[in-house]
Amino acid sequence: MRSSDSVCPTPLGIFSAVLSGVLSSLISNKISRMLKKTLCPVLWCATLLFFVFQLSGCISDNRHRMVVSVADQKMVLLRDGKPISCYSVSTSKFGVGDTPGSCATPLGVLRVKEKFGHGVPAGMVFKSRQPTGEVLRVDAPGRDPIVTRILWLDGLDATNRNAYRRFIYIHGTPEERNIGRPSSYGCIRMKSKDVIELFDTVGLNSKILITPNPLPTALLAGVPHQIRQSLSHPPE
Image (cartoon, rainbow, N blue to C red; front, side):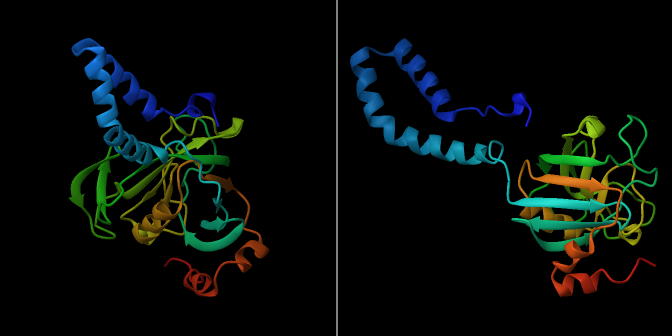
């Protein structure tokens, strides 16, 4: 983790500083002490709620890992080292790499740095990571925007250090007919139902390995049988 990301705001410190400043400037020390005692339970509740909402950005998801195979056009999701699901995906039709402007999919280890789209309906169109209000059906003709969910990736290796500023995402696509073959402009595309499931499962800072190689047989063998069966037919 980078040093700039390792320090989280302290809500209690913020509340305490604001409270002390306001009370000291507006009222006497005696009244200030009385109000601090009266408001303490309320402030603790407010602090706790604020802290809970901020917590997701400060704690790493160390239980979940993702492995994406460019060769197989598949992603395996692991929890505590054990495969729990497998998804068909689409990586770049321009190959692999991290050069700015290349539209290639970066290789190596990355992390989920930001997530967008919680609670919006499947097919919701995003522009600049904000929902537009438009919802597309699957395989809507002539349309290829980012839809449903966004997991913004940050490179952790020298070979993918440009990923974040290249806007490399895991995201939904309306072009689900192309899932299972390279068709993106650098991102990892998923079906809407799959990216919703992934979004709801993995947290911030969960790691993803993108490899050019096929997934190991032993890794796929650990995926539940019914999920393997659903992936056994290549796209038409």
